View 1: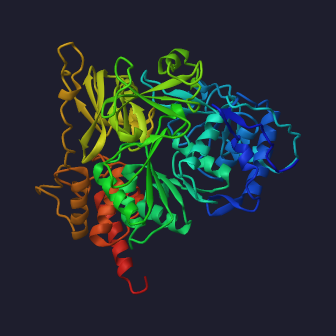
View 2: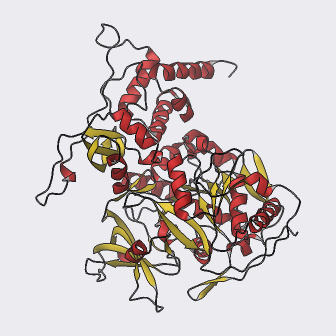
View 3: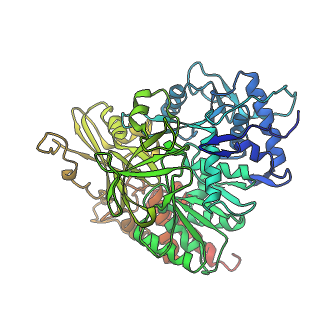
Amino acid sequence: MTAVLPERPGTRTGATAVPDLLERLALAPADRTAVVADGRARSFGELRAEAMRIAGRLAARGVGPESVVALCLPRGAELVAALVGTLTAGAAYLPVDPKLPAERRRYLVEDAGADLVVTAAEGTAPLADGVPHVTVAALAAPGPELPYVPVAVHGDTLAYVIYTSGSTGRPKGVEIGRAAASALLCELEGAGIAVTEGGRVGWNASPSFDASVQQWVRLCRGDTLVMIDDETRADPALLARLVDEQALTDLDITPAHADPLLDLLTPDGGPRPLTLLIGGEAVSPALWRRLARLGERGVLRTVNLYGPTECTVDATAGWVDGADGPHIGSALPGLRTRVLDEELNPVTEGGSGELYLAGPRVGRGYRGRPALTAERFVADAAGEAHGGRMYRTGDLVRLLPGGRLAYLGRADGQVKLRGHRLELPEVEAAVAAVPGVAEAAVVLRDDVHGAPGLVAYYRAAGPVTEAGLRERLTAVLPAYMVPAAFVALERFPVTVNGKVDRAALPAPAPAPAPAPAGDSAAAELTASQTLIAGVWAAVLGAPQVGPDDNFFKLGGHSLLAIKLVSRVRAELGVSLPVKAVYANPRLRDLAAHLDTLVAAAASPNS
């Protein structure tokens, strides 16, 4: 069997022929590095051979066009090979992050009707009853070779299914065709975003989020994918080091994670061949100005990307410069933007309305949900082709000069938190399902322990504790959807029409300080404990912190852990890894670890 991926007919989007991603992947030089992961580099020749073996064994199991293969694999070379092998077999992949709660993983596999689940190791607990499981090692193992005849695929053939938070309380799967995924890569190139020949692209996003698609498609133009593990992506110091050591040319990152990274990326203020692709949430005016200054000095360039999963990742792009404040730019070539008022009339320049997106990169719809598909994917009366559709985003924007757009917020219960898109009704449904909860409401606030976070308000009908709520929700929701604070109410404030008055919900109380040790009014702290306590108080908004306090029980989370290590680095000049915060969540333990680092840095042998 040849190791070259099969040639496939070009797919067509609109009036422009777009080559299938695998057509382009087949042209990459065999000896060029395709994937860097776990300290090992794999060439394009190795990747193609492995993908062909996987495709052959998938086909032998009856997998083909419109089949869905669930990939329950961590970010790594095996995930890339399984993804390419699945597409080579003509099938679609369903990413299932192994870190998701078991109940949610099972739901994704069952709701998508997956035909097969690919896992990393033998003995993995079944994700869903009746769905066969196989390890990626078994699919990719050399010989005996199976005869494999490539099947025909078309532009509308399903490429992947990615789930997003659902307003009905259950996630919904978005179906994207092969032509749309292929067109995304062409448009990133046409917009001057993916320009470096043989670039080195960091795969930073969870495979369960559509931002990962924007990263892996770069492989198909001959770029090198550098897989970023969880420890590195959570620690600004490690991430900055990886950018340098791997000479990354492109890094996709959320604004919340970009801010603490900038000082470490540009310590000398010199230029670097790096493009930051900012997306996932709104860019603050302060961060926009900072990035614009770096761009004007030629240090690095930044593009602000916006787009819903339903329209194949990226819909608009705007270069960050000093000419204006934050904006999301204008439409990429494969999509058309329409800003419409409540009566579906186009707004004029300077006006605001809901954003609709039209064009060949609009997805096929929601898997198994025809009614919801019809509600969100509506007829495009102004379209260039009969039968065209446009996607109703639910995002409010202002139309700026030149067709650029300024993002204003949501028109419904959907929010963005630390780069994640989620529906508040889904979180509310999970809270309300906890035994003992009679009523629940969830809001996104800017003042939760000094940072944006979800707050769950509830009225109890039985014995309910915050610890019990958090434990129950952690078992059914991804970590980013678990509220940072809980507020018990005797009754909910309501508006004149009887609905919950969300604006009148009280702010959560500051995190409680622990009871003082012994008979003393406050526990005595060492010098390092005092320093850590001060930093904790600043990032958590806690009025009093003791040596036995736990960072995460006081409301800490991944973003605040990043802020914590950044403050320690700024005040002491010591690089405290983020993983040390997770390994030493109690203040006295973290202070002792910090003492060890300071002593090692001061040692003449260090």
